[in-house]
Image (cartoon, rainbow, N blue to C red; front, side, top):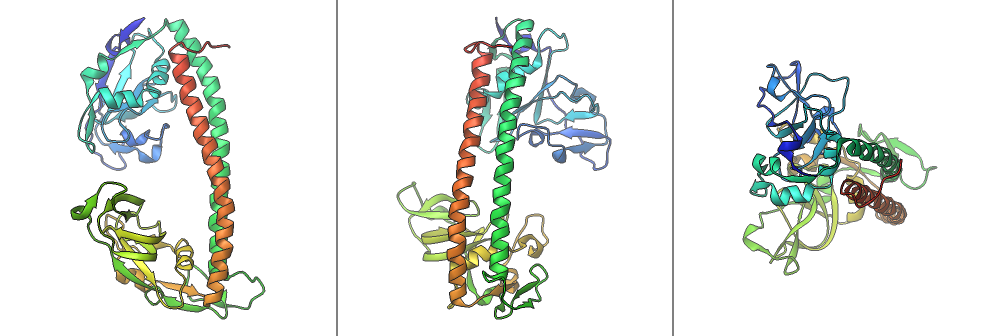
Length: 389
């Protein structure tokens, strides 16, 4: 039966605009609270006033209604223990108070309609998109009778739980490998490859002991730290210039380059705890520094060492995490002799290659399971796949 959303749901409304007062009794959800597909209570905010019109009830379907990248994300609220949750103005509440339909069927339907929602139901710029209520309530759905909805939901609950368990298992394996990788780096770049070598106190609180023959140097004596610059005046199409590097890697291209060779990239503002290694011609954006190794210092060693630095500990106290050249330059680091740096880099490169191969394989399995889940939901809610109990 083809029905519009407003015929399926007796209540469709945006949430409220609360006053956001900490330690208040009313917990308020915004789109970030469920943008990852589950309820993340750490993202809740609070209101001192009771926004009753935005009260979330068990069985409600919540949909992110603003924001590029999350608009159209949905959550089925099925929590028996929480009666003080409310939606803010970035969230739409869909409810069937007449109990004619199973709202979880609608949840499964919209779960696979993210691209369609963003293509047909929104307006605004890339950075400020908004779900249009009229488009939503007039959206047509081929919805079966409630008994059939219940059967589909029961089937999908069972199948999706099984797939999610497999995904969780792979994600745990992934986290184990990532921790192993970081642990190996931490150990080798601060203690070397010879466990029998005499040790000494480094005087660096986050490291402790280091091999007795290693030096302790300020970072500014190991690398020459340079500012990035804005690239907008020299931006070109992909493939026509040199990569523009930021805290997340390559994100644009420029007609000029500012350096050619090995560098350590360090965050200046925003994402400051994700160092990168790069070799070649590039332009560095103004939110990062690029550090050129000094004589007797191997750049790749400094990259591996930088992965162990507690950068946020040194960050300047501002609302946006930031680092200056001066702050970076004063950081004390252990430095082994040149040949030992080279041996450590060769060892970690080999380790990385093997661990990264396992990580890539697990990520491919997770992606395949997520595609399987999406295809299964879509085929079942549209009647393309028969269900068996």
